[in-house]
Length: 66
Image 1: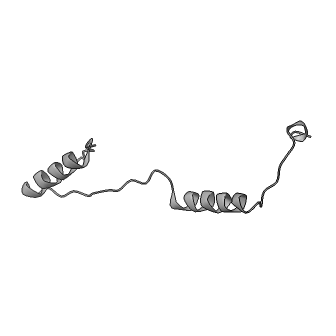
Image 2: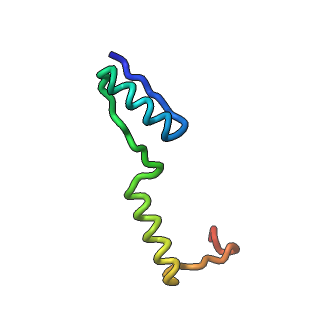
Image 3: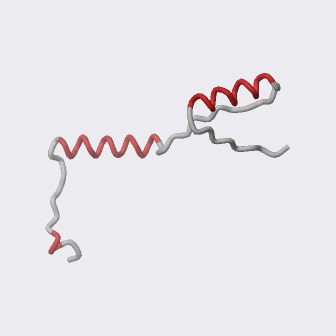
């Protein structure tokens, strides 16, 4: 059987859909989509922490491509 993707606009719609699917005994998965990969977020947070600690290099724009 084919899958159907439903995108509720708010929590109330999501809850109502879940209740209807349960009543109809339709199997479903509640997927919590992450906007970003957790590994990527860890790298960004590490870089921010290093920058806050002064661990960065400033490159003069005139010397950027030399």
